[in-house]
Length: 525
Image (tube, rainbow, N blue to C red):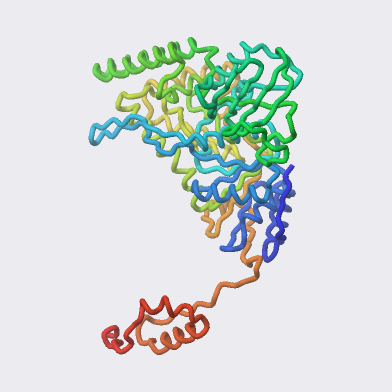
């Protein structure tokens, strides 16, 4: 499991803070706050807590850059464990939206960062294959993610001494969205040459070379993706470890592989919702709007049936995920075990983000639905609502039905009809929207808020506030003297001269900011 490596030892307030936090969690309590001061090495404290708990940990930061810095530091503390960086993979993202004030429709436009997408896929793979995982994420951890079960089922296990059918291997790789090589092998590509199969996996920066003897897998090698040289057995970048590993797992090339085994049923559901929406518009004498949504959905159905994809396929995720209307989406939280540890870094900044993002997403989607660009079910391609997050992490022990009924107040008649139908189906299965949220609960999850200025929300939620004020270096903040801005020029001159005597090098900088002290009368005036 976790192996913390550091030449430092806890000092200052750190030992007491670590002991209090660990004792609190060990007693069965699940929420607390660490109030820290600057330069008290909170990351080192965080690493010691992870080392003591020995549980898969999710750290959420409010900023991509800070998350990257935190992931780098934690990787240095845990070089032998899986430390991952999980943020939005868009370098540029313009979501689909409609501005009714100017009658402006904006199509979705995005540029994907392939390296960050690799980090995301590696995160999902690690959570499904090992226990010693630390994930540093941004607020994008609330957004929709591929189903855990389907991601796990669509992987390819390559094991030495097993026999494989080459045709079936190719079909499986194509199904996982890997592409045959054209020229140079790149990420998400494979190359079959006689009895050698090269796979540039989606989760690593090197190539798996599988060498066969007829149809039996004889050896697996790790090759540099640029030079194709054999990677040294002691190289830290070998994820699975070992030389000529006996077994490797090839994970899907994308998180957007859809379950098409029930494609016709999915398309029928989309068409049925379209018909209800068209009828709703016609009843209101909105013939232009009825024709617009009819043509849009029919085009999407035709494209999905023929190619399996359409640019805005996420708007139909409700049907592809086989969820009930307003059922919580799948997120990174579903990949973690029930006894996970959650650390909210800079909680006074991060928690407001987690609260605001679902509301902003809903506002944008409601405009698209209200003005006839999308079906009402598009609202269900969404991040986790904050009240759902509270419920899943056991911050909120009870849940009122009004928490999700409120969202239906401004919904269309079509969506209300979908909810009504789904409730009948769920009732027959002994489920409802609330029961699904409850099933996702992680009653043993532990939450630690980190903040130098915690807000009243986390202070009230936490039953224990741990302070980390004294620095490991035992250095105190310098004493600061505040003088009135007028009259005290003599004292200011004296302080400045004393400072220059202690630090003569500052004189070079002070020359550019010299003050004519004979002009005090001007300042006094």
